[in-house]
Length: 181
Image (cartoon, rainbow, N blue to C red; front, side, top):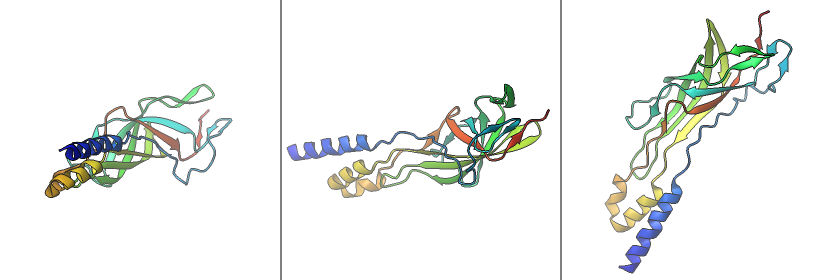
């Protein structure tokens, strides 16, 4: 009985340590290699644009799919020489590139996507960057369950991935923006 309690305690602590924190890191796409520089009346490609999710994304309901467009919005004004170039609240669009729903044997869900563009008035401005979210895995719990009851691992799942409204996403200008005089 002590061996069973020790095994269960080890498996439970391993399962808790398996939980991974959510990441919402965007990295510039390789195309945007120009340093974010401000030159006179031009905001250069590579300048950072802070976005947030404008809709709730989750793998829980299994209704997300690769290629699906998602709504984001600009979180902060992007300015040049004291003038607002891209106002906060401007709509932006992203695309889901890889979706995996949680599954048996402790597999967690994940959401991967890329930022495409934002709109200011009737102008579409190209952006680059990526976003992702991963649920936590249940691998340690599955191993422990299989040791106790072999078929139990089949029914154990990880958690769904979720990016709620307001989740920050970092993007970058993918083109130079010249201010009109």
